[in-house]
Image 1 (cartoon, rainbow, N blue to C red):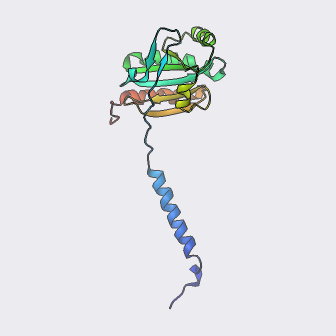
Image 2: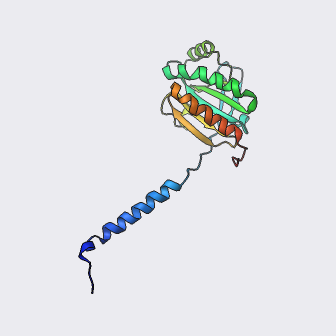
Image 3: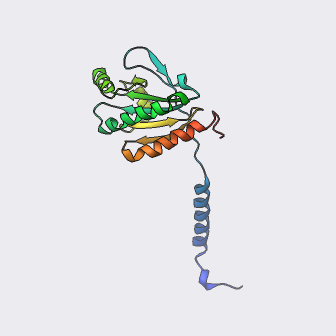
Length: 179
């Protein structure tokens, strides 16, 4: 029997390295499956009724969970207002979900920032728990077929380009996302 001393006792290491390389290569090529956005219905902050996520089926929806005491939320709101106004007639919607128990603070904030898009109120944090919101602001961008395609925590001006590009990309897609 011919035996190569160079590789003696290393057979298991070679097998592990080959398996590890195959696993890394396979993982690198996979794409994640976008999760279906969970449905919800919440009251409007101004008390004029309620809205459901289903009301916007077929639209690209930017969900923003926020609070009046949140400094990054103060940076995000003017941008959201601009983004909504820019794409309002294109099947784009912003839903700003306030999580405070004191609606007066949220209303004052909404007036201060002239939030003209729908502002919803989640004082029990039912929907924010459903979406596993880790902090504020947290935002999700939902495509026309109801799948979460983007999520983020916090906000700074460096995010503006990426968020705008994501919205424009999703607006260009068909409802089934095949474009």
